[in-house]
Amino acid sequence: MTAAAPTLVWFRQDLRLADNPALHAAAEGPMLAVYVLDDAAHRHGGANRWWLHHSLAALAKALEARGAALHLLHGDAVAEIPKLAKAIGAQSVQAGRLYAPWARARDAAVAEALEAEGRKLVLHTSSVLLEPDRLRTGQGKPYAVYTPFARAIMAMGEPPPAIPAPGKLAGVKPPKGGVSLGSLKLLPHKPEPDWAAAFPAMWTPGEDAAQARLAEFAGEDAADYADGRNTPGIDGTSRLSPRLHWGELSPRQVWHAVAGHGQDGGRQTWLKEILWREFSYHTLWHRPQLPDKPLRAEFEQFGWQPDAKLLAAWQRGQTGYPIVDAGMRQLWKHGWMHNRVRMITGSFLVKHLLQPWQDGAAWFLDTLVDGDLASNSQNWQWVSGCGVDAAPYFRIFNPILQGQKFDADGAYVRDFVPELAQLPDKWLHQPWAAPEAVLRGAGVTLGQTYPKPVVDHAGARARALAAFADLRSGR
Ligand code: FAD
Image 1: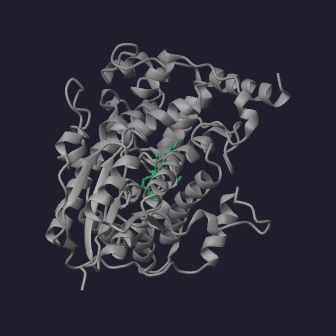
Image 2: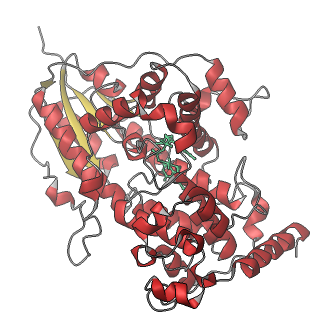
């Protein structure tokens, strides 16, 4: 009797053992797990790379405990995967499907190279509930509006149950040529500043921590989600986004964990957010220009006014608008920003400052631990009014009112903009309007301890509306 050929499991954005169909397909026989860092095909943003480092470490440990190694490679996956498959005599390579244009092109090339030698690449549905191709409107088109899309998914009923993690694995010895995790240089390294210094207190990457957070959120916090999700100063949301991005959890596990506690108002609302993520993947798959070009083509003529100084003030949280600055500083400090504040800071960049949305999207992708091409691009186009089912451009968030409404007690601004902490609530979201004595009493000197506003709200609003009117009239 000849021994069964090993299977190669190629981990990408499914860094988990449970509910991992690619691993499941290989778990019965000899197998080798591999991760390839392929910077030439796609360079992950800095905060994404920090997460990836720790998540790979956790995955390697979990695989090892079951008898398998995680083989790490650094290079061109189109060359490395077929070479590795050949070296271990694998008949097939199993992986979770990816949806970004760069990944689709790479998978097609890997599949072709494998086929040329009689092997195959098998892609599984792993990071979405439903393959984007499986859902179409009555006219056979991709969905362009969220509500009917979400309704169509809900009408399909519960997703199939999640697959349990495998027990023992029959890992084969990796061939020579593997690299160490440290050599991938995923963490900040000199001469860079250690911009991730505050991340470890905030995040514990890895499947076990992801499962623990999911259980905690689904069991308790989700019930209050409908009320708590708009207050950035409290822990009202799940913070599962980096875990979903890297696939430490599958959306199917998340669905069952939440639905298993009953579908009260909070949990219903939360599941709808998971469907926004799904809608982003649907859009990216069917409209691969999403990351680069406005889906409403007329916006290609929009009168952006690129300005490096304004962009830098926004990136550094130095715009003089406290809610905007708090958001941008939370992003830098923790690699994450509350959704309400993502909308406010995004709107401020494209409307108040007239900077191209692509610049904001690029900054978010570099600094968010959950930076995700589908969700990030879709949301930036939503904020800018140029995507599918987007907020209309002329609806301009007022950063003062947004701050007063959603950070009424100032907890969020005081946390991330400590130089304003002593200001009374009344002036916290508009320090430039405070009487001189109040500023002095709070130790604030505008232009010195905290910036003066980089633009005047009313003037900036009028300028944005004029730019939009020009676009509509074709001027
Ligand atoms: P929760 O409120 O607990 O929601 C649960 C999950 O639903 C999230 O983890 C996420 O996977 C999904 N989700 C929630 N809201 C959205 C949404 N609007 N669109 C798509 N999925 C959603 N999310 C990312 O995961 N990656 C990004 O790069 C990203 N960029 C964004 C850029 C902008 C300008 C805006 C306005 C939003 C962006 N979002 C992005 C969506 C959203 O802000 C985050 O998913 C959410 O804040 C993550 O926190 P949470 O896990 O606590 O979310």
